[in-house]
Image 1: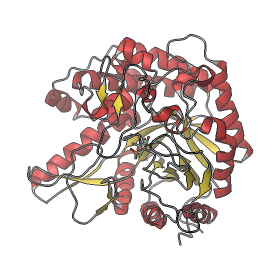
Image 2: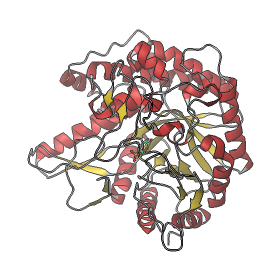
Image 3: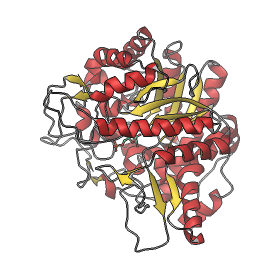
Image 4: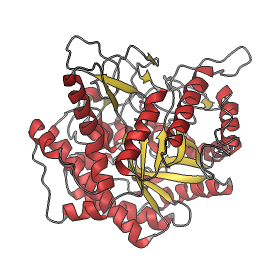
Length: 479
Ligand code: BGP
């Protein structure tokens, strides 16, 4: 008997904007990610107001899944995937987000993708909004700061729910919704950067606009969860949180309190709304601290209550230490708050590797909510080099994944109800934070490079064969 349950969902995860390419093909409109140039670990990617000639925009071609989907899904099937987490690009369906009628060619593309998954016995897990808001909505409305977006999002969701009936069962509303509480979230998620052009790291971090945007996303999410429950009883709807696991750096009670505040502000604030259907008790204090006044309309709180999710999903890459000591050295966490943990090593991008933190995190979430959990992103972004035999021997990636799966199993032994595990970037793709190709996560190597060159050919890495064995044994054989 395996530790993980029968029917455990094994697979990989991607996002449309980071791997589809074909950014202006078959009627697709520009999304926020299409306006972002490439960058690196040290040089931030930029967002531009128009497409500048002679500038590289990595999402425009990405790894061209749009024209390689059959080959790629066949490779996933060869590894034994039972689940494939992907997203729908809103601007393929509604190019500006404001049309009344959907773009048939965009809809047809996802029919082909989901049919192909079905042919291979792979269950799609679909993120409805993953870092690709229609750019026109930024220009017209300052993104999610405007309440108008709720109705537009509902129209988009109703369209895809109806169209993919019988093909998709598992849906996630917003990818990493809590990134909206962090500076990175302005361009990636809330789209509150109307008129701004420059490094994504310097985009306006307007707290009033962002907390209002988050409220609109919560209401939009709850409305469509409720709608799905009423119209499609077979659908399961989940939230998605970028889990910021924080430890107090020392046992100084001030560090402990600061770490608790961090966990609340960065994680629980969003997921309490989506799982419990109400703002947490500490929300008011966060708003006060930030000087924001969230406009909540009549009926909003009822909607939040009525649209709670069926399962909780999250990404997990690292943990961070929190301290009040101004002299402690910073770590490169995405949220910019953490300091280095002396017990942990970091990836080449400074993300602290902490498998036990995954066990801790799963337990914390499950204790709090008692609904099924799924790890929908986890993985190691690394520089891959081919060996003399022409293959990438990514033993470092295997070590990372093995140690996390081991800890995930420990959490299941602790009593956590875990539905599945999809590694991030199962095929090499464009990095969300930096726009690089060089930060690779895949089991499948893609011949595509940071300067935009490459013939897009796909090759199996050593980890491909390892993961196949893991899935084949339902997580028992991790050697
Ligand atoms: C998450 C995002 C993904 C993804 C991943 C890895 O935050 O949901 O879209 O890209 O992180 O991050 P990066 O690409 O920056 O290495």
